[in-house]
Image 1 (spheres, helix red, strand yellow):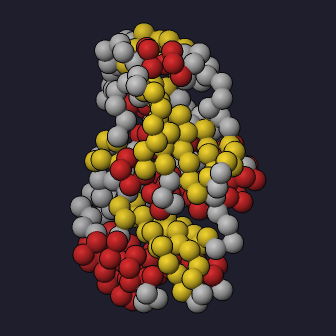
Image 2 (cartoon, rainbow, N blue to C red; image 1 turned 135 degrees about the vertical axis):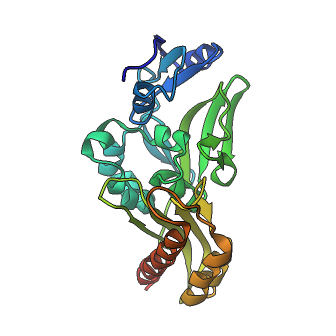
Length: 280
């Protein structure tokens, strides 16, 4: 199929993009790896497509005041090569090779992946696990939204139709940071049947501030809060058992909810070893 007819505009600034978003049924184009497919299948039919790729300054990666800031137009492939991300956001570095295939990562953007908010995608879960923030520009100015408050429902976020996501920010890793990542997919590069991104702080022989963000098991990336408490207490078995209360995956075309919950427990055991081995 081919897209329905639409007008096209190439924004030269964030302010111009916001101004163009005042048009009815406008959509933003960054890497286009999700949007173009939905256009071709006519699942999306905007009247105006606003190309963000002409805007300078949205493709930077920098550490500032204890945070690592990643511009929304940073390509996945660029992020994979970034020494700053490898050093200060190792969880994101671990997740990036699992996103699609090289051709997709060459075009897909960090901001586009997070704004699209596919519940089986890796980066939204990483942002949630890290306690990150999103920098959003809108008609009333710029604001920061915590990842815990950003993902609202299936493909629904705190972005309004007039907002532009300009960057994400995560606390820069240091010697006490621990992270782990694992997922199950039918083939490498496919969306995950179930996945887990985790972050914690080393605390002597244990862990504290544990954040477990599962993906592929609900309408949004989900924190398993009871499992976090159990794992912070050093009891991996109790953490796995707590997933019975934390998660209630729906059946889908890839697996039943029961299978997904079982896989979540296996992932938690694997990722727990990553966290504890890194600590030691």
